Each structure stands twice: as C-alpha cells, then as structure tokens.
Image 1 (cartoon, rainbow, N blue to C red):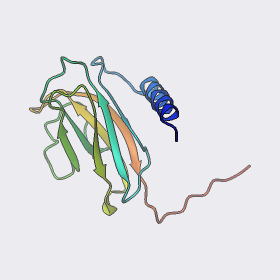
Image 2 (image 1 turned 135 degrees about the horizontal axis):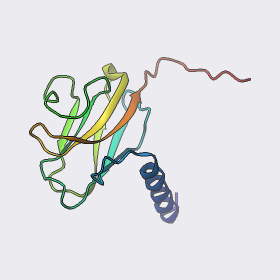
Image 3 (image 1 turned 90 degrees about the horizontal axis):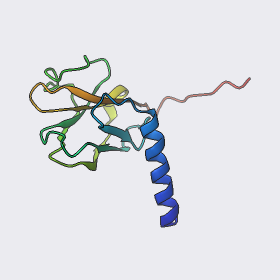
Image 4 (image 1 turned 45 degrees about the vertical axis):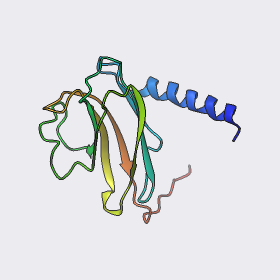
Length: 138
C-alpha cells in the first residue's frame, strides 16, 4: 500500500473511531486495530489523552462483566494486561491474544493508579477460531 493511502486510511479510521466512542469529559480516547481478534492475533491499543492527564493513568484489558467506574478491583487475576500511560499523550500498546481468552472484554482507561476513576472504555470480543459462523441470507 502506498504511504499516502496508508496515512489517509489511518486518519479516516481515527475520525470514525472518535465519532463512535463515548467521551466521559476527559478528552481521552482509546481505539483498537481489531474488535474481534482471535488467538494468536496481535491486539494494538491506540490511545490519546490531554497533556494534563495524570502520569500514573493506566490502561487495562478486563472482562466486560467486571464492575465499572473505580479501579479498586483491577489488581486481580482477571486483568490480562495493564500498562501505565507514563506521561504519553498519544501512543499504542501491543498484546498478543492467547488461546484461553475467548469472550467479551473491555480496554479501560483509568485516571490514576490508586483507585483511579475510569474515564474511557471500549468493548471487544475475542473470538474462538474453531467456531464457524454462518450468515443467514434472506
């Protein structure tokens, strides 16, 4: 793919993702390269935060059924990925999906590391590559 086409596609993807995301007043955004990854896929988590966002803000991949809002439960075994933002205002993080993780998950962003307030969440589904899906045609 030509570099200019790639840049246009990235900008278009960012615009469409920002339009679809809920902003909880923080101006923080999170979006993914794939919303239905399967085992072995690399999930890329893109994020942007304002310059004044706390340096100990963090992102985590957590089961969708976990309570929303405060992060006091997030240091348990069900969190499969956790990364500090560390003062970055725009970056990406990578995580390779493993076999046992099928189901509904969220990437959640928190304002700080000590019982931080959730400021953004985006759901995704890890699909089982052995299950065939068929679409009914009418």
